[in-house]
Image (cartoon, rainbow, N blue to C red; front, side, top):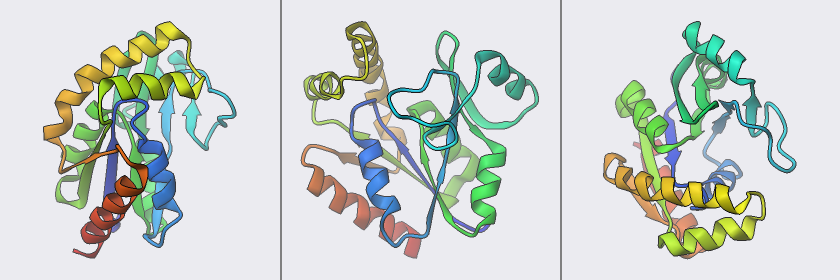
Length: 188
């Protein structure tokens, strides 16, 4: 396991996935760690691509079997976690590994990997802008959006625990800052 680890965390709707997708198309030798979740797929999401979709029962069994580097029950019966087998698979391919995880997962993965990891927090310009983005997605019911906004306000308190904070106000600027940050980390 010789690659480096890059962790991205952010409140839902901050643009973290957009930044990650951009990075994966650059020349950084990145592999993507597909997380596991017990939530249902959204839109066109496919098992093994965006997430490994598991039932809450299967997720709990994998917890009992110590198959996760980290996991969290984000909402009742809505688990997210990082499978050890997925991390080992990616790192064994000689790639640097990129994670897209919630803030608690990000802090826990950083602790697990220490200096081999760079923890990046992507921050929206404001909670109001975040609300606008979540409504614009059209993937969640209004009550789910409000649940995400409430959680985002709590998640923003985690920003100081990350190595780098990137404010995603103007996407092109956020992309440039992200590329520069990842480039420096990987070449160090």
